[in-house]
Amino acid sequence: MIRTDFIKDKELWERFVLNFPSASFLQSWNWGEVHSALGKKIFRLGFFEKQKLTGACLLVKQEAKRGFYLECPGGPLIDWTKPIYQEEFLNQIKKIGQEENCVFVRVRPQILETLANRLLFKKLGFLPAPMHLHAELTLQLDLQKNEEQLLRGMRKNTRYLVKKAIKGNIIVEQSTNLEDIEMLYKLQLETVKRRHFTPFAKKFFLGEFKTFLKDDQIRLFKVIYKNKVLAAALIIFYGGEAIYHYSGSSLRFRKIPASYALQWAAIKEAKRRGCQRYNFWGVAPLDKPKHRFAGVSLFKRGFGGEEVSYLHAHDLPLNLKYWVVYVFETLRKICRGL
Image (cartoon, rainbow, N blue to C red; front, side, top):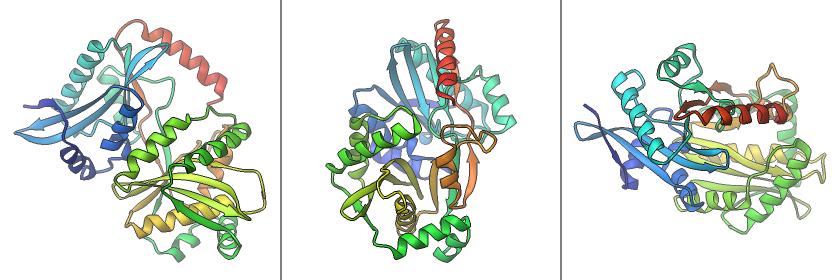
């Protein structure tokens, strides 16, 4: 029998998540704290079997104009082979969703994109979501190789630019200074103009940086050339993984391989911390050369690594208003070229 309760003990939560195979920072205690600090309601569900915590699920309530909904990023962390966990998870999200007047629940589980998993979610009453939720197709680099092996695994041009960056007058610094978020935000706005995507709010960058910094789980990397910051990125270190999360770059000194210098410095820091993999986060599918992120994906793939595809986000409709949301998001996806 499974018992479900809300978790208020950070140590209990983190001990379980960090020991759960394939768990990501998206179910970490601090990811919940980031959203809580932004004024969002969060729920940390714990699934217990014989008084032992055997499953966890972070839910975030999103109060969008098109309707309230619950979001489960990178979760739940349960044994998907056991129907009793599937049913308990389903019952709990339905209950909380209805109590919070939500139109639907959106789940992007940390399980692989397979036919069996798609059929499982269909059986549970979920529908493929019209929009993605966080990175689904990711690029992950094995850090158990030494630096020479990592360099050999890169595309020839990438390896050349990394070595050029090492030999050049490029400085890469790690920062814990909250004031540097302003610089990252401005670089993101420059990047937005080139790649045409919706920027993240400065307060979101600041909230993520402040929260994960308390546990030494994040650094802001910045590349400096001739006293000018050419690129910056937030790198999260969590559960044996380093994640290239948010970034921005400038068009000044375009021939300087600033982004290559940043990635190599972050990879080396991840190895120093004992991380097993470096996650470049989202990449565009190879069969979509006109995808707006095709260019940056080509850059990421130059470093080598293995593509890992997680199950696409799925929605659990809670009332008929969901279909209005479905049509709206489908049209928005088309307009954004995703």
